[in-house]
Length: 124
Image (cartoon, rainbow, N blue to C red; front, side, top):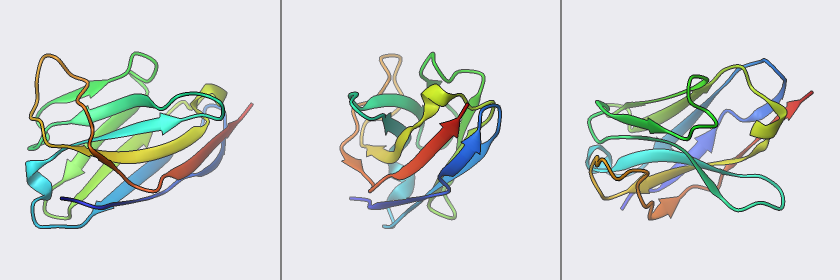
């Protein structure tokens, strides 16, 4: 099992950028599909992005496609989310998530664990 700690959230103006990081514990990090989900006030948690175990495959929600980029560094047990051209609708708590299932055409994956989250606020 991995445990995740997110960082990098903050307040940014619309059109700006942020880079989230997720440091994961455990020697089996490279065996997990990793991803990001978010939850805005009063809304359900929603999928944002996922990356395969080796980093060769990625998958994005339509709402962030072309603006967000997920990546991972298995040597550092870290996954990143580069967020560009941020919009007020991107305001949410962002959670780093892990899944045991491998890359599939049926993604998004079903995540089994989440970190504590980091707040991202985009002002208009």
